[in-house]
Length: 406
Image (cartoon, rainbow, N blue to C red; front, side, top):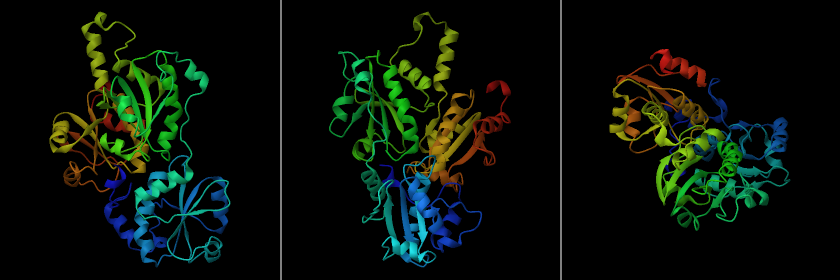
């Protein structure tokens, strides 16, 4: 499971050394240039924040030892959740500065963690263990708001009588998963309700099922990894959302393309062998072009052997990341698009939290996430530190290869 492997030794966009130093110092005495992920609230901003959405607040005192120990995890939680239109905002209040505010919310010890749900007068106090799995389970249970909804009855009826799953996204559970995927083709989304990327994908995923209503050879489904951890663990899900193609109960591959409806639909049609033209009538040049296009996905590198082979010849652009890192999650669709639109070079990624890759990341001097290195014939270039927009990344790559190769 993703969260069991998390070790709060690094935080996105920071090197390890400043992060570790911050964990043992006063929270309110951070360097001015260090990004603060948890939102710091005061009496003027507190009511506005809880009136705008769900807010999970840590009430703390800078001198409190338990607060200092919790600080890295709280910032890490904010790193995961405080991205575009979050399900819940991670915040904090310094009770040595705002004693009245803390007293108003029955804070009698430090740290006190309270979840303020939108539209409710009373907050809910967190009483569990202060680790990431327990906290995220608490948030999911308390909010208990489905990130996605099934299609309407009308959409279900459009599927006909042949297959009751046609035209809808099948919501799988621990009890139904194995039987459901045991035969046939399945495109499965592994998600977490609090994940903003999952929330953005939800309507497209439903549209995909609707678009494929006349394709009885594939079922579109989803499973909530915060409720059914063992299933997601079995399929080595390390980030959300993860899209897997499963045939007769076996994982065939992880989808790494763009998440727009057209691209997703084209991928499904390719996997079930439903091309727009008869493949037998294609000439060799067209088949070769199609095969090349299929290869233009982000390569997931695992272990030294795969890594060395990927960077040995030509150009390889590698993203070193951690699955829980918010900045890495935001970069992911752009990185996938870069791979889709780039020909002739390797676009790859290395999960530094994987035991197989930890030595690689140390050898390559990865000190924060994400770290982007370009390799030319096995030789590492200077770290890429520019903008992470697609045009800037493409322009950087063009410096190393010919313009006709992009």
